[in-house]
Image (cartoon, rainbow, N blue to C red; front, side):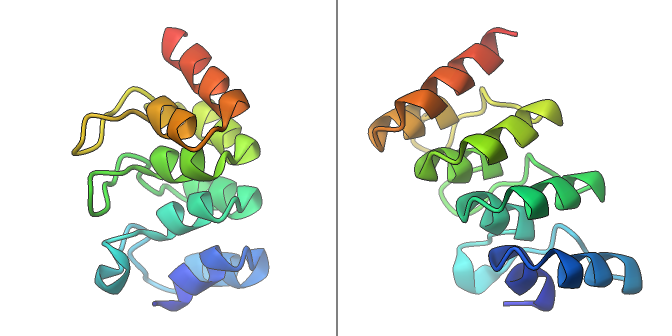
Length: 127
């Protein structure tokens, strides 16, 4: 796990910002030991809203896919992380994208019983 991934996982915004500003790092670098997750996948999966927003503001690609075809929206939906999902929606990240099994983020939220997240995602797709 790189310093970027670790800072995103821990919602360590200060370190994350230092890494993004002070180095020539690939913001979309994939951690192959963790299923090709980017820092944005990890932040979204852990419900780290501040880190998610910071990564998106610095140009992280919200359409990157990890193993299984999951986007960061799928990762946030799995945990029912409403604030992260709202940030992804505000940044116009696609919520209709299907993973390798044909599931959208709303489908993932439903599987894990996150009804509020499912409803939010369904509304975002309508807009």
